[in-house]
Image (tube, rainbow, N blue to C red; front, top):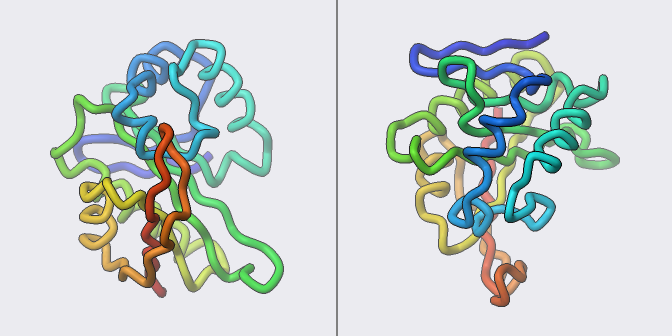
Length: 172
């Protein structure tokens, strides 16, 4: 079990018992609007149970982290190693409960996961996508040395609108 600690929070695998705090912090339209539609809204207890069950499959245990404060889930950060010709690349995604925005938590969580991935996987590139209207997420990535590599014009359909998406990447 991988556990990554910072002074204000801990990254650890999602586990049974996290359902209530996960639902409480994930059920927010301001979070959903910045994520792919596979992240549901409203976010229900049933969604939390399904997510935690999926996280506990062997292949997901080392790539999906709950961001916890006082052992309560306040966010999540995941990565997946791509395949075929991109097998040296991983893709990162994350979210944080609104009550915890602006405190540097996500910037530190991204740093911890980057260090973990680059030191424990045969990965040389980490990438992340950000919707054009989410400058906070751009700032998190830029603080961690990610470079804006491109703007994918009219790439995302979200909440009835078609918007651009930014591709950021960091090389080991």
